[in-house]
Amino acid sequence: MTEFAEDPAAADVAAYVELWRALNGPDLVLMRGPAACAPLVASGNDLDVLCRSAEAQRAAEETLRAAGFRSVQTTAAYQQHFARRVAPKRVQTVDLYCGPYFGWGVLGPNVTAHSLPEMTLLRAVFDKRDLAYFTDRYAVADLPPSWQAALPSQIADESPVILGLRLLKRGVVRVDGWMTAASLVGRVESRIAQLVDPPGLELALHGVDGSGKTTLSDRIRETYEGTCERIYMGSSGFRTLPIRYWQSKRGAGLAMSLEQAYRRGLGKLLTRRGYLVIYDRHPWQTKVRGWRSVPVFALNYLHAGTKVHAACFLTGDVEKIHARKPEHTLEFLTDMNRRFSITSKIGSERLLTIDTTAHDADEVHRLVQDFIEQLWTRPPPPRFDRISRWLRRRARAT
Image 1: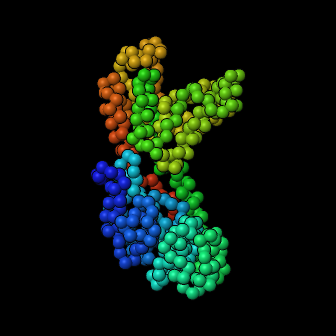
Image 2 (image 1 turned 60 degrees about the vertical axis):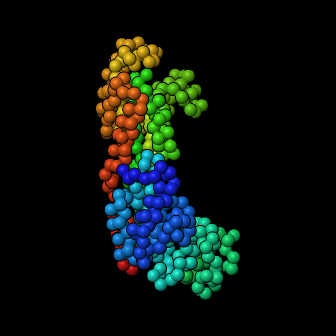
Image 3 (image 1 turned 120 degrees about the vertical axis):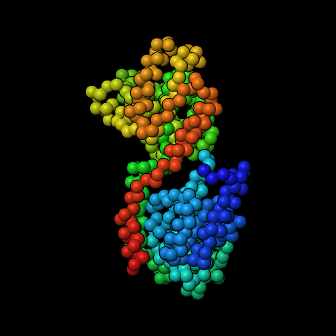
């Protein structure tokens, strides 16, 4: 893991400045980034780099991979997204854009021959949908005469969609059908990739009452603040009125299955968006008995039919755990501890077993954090962009 200064914001800026120095070349334009890098638009800490040639793009890719960045599949066929984790709370990102494409496949001017105002306007209209990206730096008078004829003199209050239609109507830009098709197919491919190997992580904290699940989950949320969510998978906390009604009537099993399926579905959605999801109790622990009921069987499969990415089984001396939280008998805790150990093994892809009675809270938190960091650095997932890559090559060939 890369070490940086104590101030995360200053460390990120310094790291991006150093990275841009390594990337910078005559065929690269920094569209957006920290002000210290002198971009077209100073905003945020990540870098948006426009590559004027395929050779410059390949060189930038090699530099980013050598610096520890990982390529992430995107929906836009002309965009490449690179990410690198540098600390539990921070991720550095760099986007490479292959000129002269914008939006869903709009072919702009020859970026090697035209000045920067044209590229900035196309980026504002077709990518950002925010004209301030252009008007904060340039004016319509900075554009060539053919562009000025297609646009009103003042565009600050105009709609980006209307301006895009004006440019298309006047023939200033045109739509590349191959690149548009590649972007549409790429969106489908990226959704498939998110389903097969989500960018986030599911971590189940498993153990009997008193083993420290809630305390540990709270500390993990503080460590990964902003990118971590906790989901309670116990048999309480029903959220919707119909579920609470069924619980009080004869359909308690169906109500619990529906609630658990909802919670697990929420967790899967968050992992697709890159979150670290902490399950307080293993999803398989709350599997409802009653396989003869078809609805219960189907809902059980939704929340307990697939393994979680990883689990931490919190165990130890049952007598000491019972002394912490004597809500159940010692015999009951011993039996549940044995059952939970089996559930953790068969319901998780990766398992970490921790004796919470032999370690203090700080040591347990450190062990779990190291375990999470190992999972974050797993090999890159298989790519599902074969069709969009073929369409992108056809677009560049024509």
